[in-house]
Image 1 (cartoon, rainbow, N blue to C red):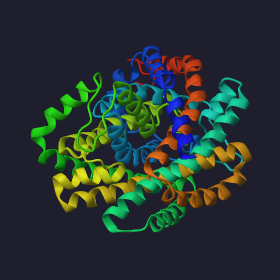
Image 2 (image 1 turned 180 degrees about the horizontal axis):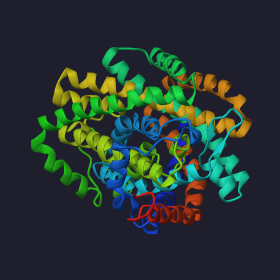
Image 3 (image 1 turned 135 degrees about the horizontal axis):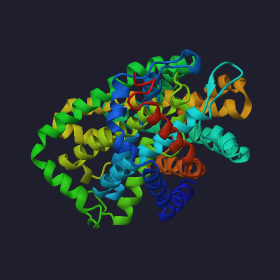
Image 4 (image 1 turned 60 degrees about the vertical axis):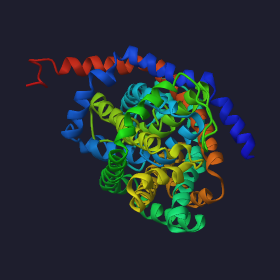
Length: 449
């Protein structure tokens, strides 16, 4: 089973799929006139001073929607995923993660705008949004919308749960000696307690947890990079050089081709920042806002924080410390790298970050999964889905790291294809919304006064 999943994942994430992800991102970059660059300053202003929340137009504040989304994308993909990318694709994988992050910001903008435009108010009074709604209402493809919702629900149950709990159990075993079963059971209990109150409860947890866990991890990473500051220039040179040339085996590293660097860099980048997979629009569709463009700008900051900041910190720590050649993998490799710079405290930082990142991702993705269940079966499906989701978290203690990530890649790719096609076909409405928003804020207009 593990070998079949790995083969299927390798096939799906071959050149055609990677070209589709980057190709759609580049197409959106052109059609939306590099929104991720032109409006980056505006996105920061929206983050510092979010647009006024409209209680009648959503369930949580725009900032809470961003923190909920960040809680879902800043996870063990930034710790274990980056480590797996570098051990499988070499230092050049980090370069391709940066590229996927840059183009992914525009992708995230577009899908989040569409998530607001095509959202609905459900029978239970909660707002519903995401690719299944713009596939059905924007393109008139209810069958494809159902396929996406089923794919998202399966990915959430069978991949997100196991990837996060597996990564958490590995670092807890190496640092604390905990059994994988105990770690996964504890994660399931805490997740269940957090999600029982629905999106508002999840948002309240995320508003506190997401900034705290990010700052904790980055402070630790900065400490390691300071300890190895003399190696930073050489590490950056390795990233650039081996993005375009193969790297030979050495130490515990098995060597990697340019194709492997490209494949694992883009695949891990997409898994980490979620751009194009259709998950994040579900969170932003709950925002209390009548301004889809402003919320889209806020949404694309999630990709920047995830890939350009947190994943970059992990990658540079692995390279500067030299731990990437140790033969270790996943969170245990990152823990070794932090320990090289910070001593015993380094492992503790990675342990705390892995557990917090994993919990935040599990909590957010429970909401994504239940929204898909509500789309497919109605609002009554929310409760049973939450219970099933928490049970599925226990599966993370049963599989190895590489098999778990291959399963995640496979389901991520299946989910991304219909969403990417929809973004290409619906880019017109996104562009028109941008023009209208720009016109509304011209000097002398009612809004600008």
